[in-house]
Image (cartoon, one colour):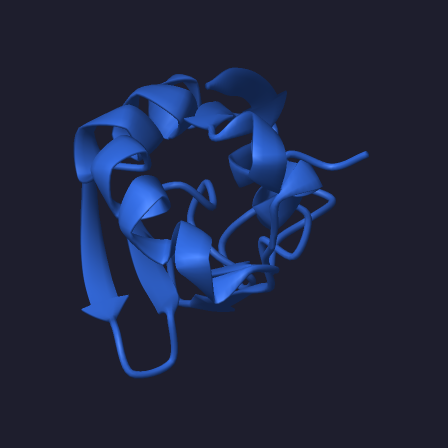
Length: 111
């Protein structure tokens, strides 16, 4: 196993709904789906966003798509209409998610 940044093995998109950020997470290689399921937990994602005021993370597993959907509550400083934050929609939050590190088999790590 080798430790890599999540962005090396997966991609993500983010959006908002009020004061919630919604982020997808999809491994480039579907075979990594169960490995990411073990490591990218609700607790770990909440810890990553807690400094921004996040109070809860819910992970929705989408095994037929080999993808995840994370909903992070209270992370957008009030949301689009209630925040002076430059990223009121939370579009850049997916980059923070992709900064996590994960352990993957060396054969599946990027070149």
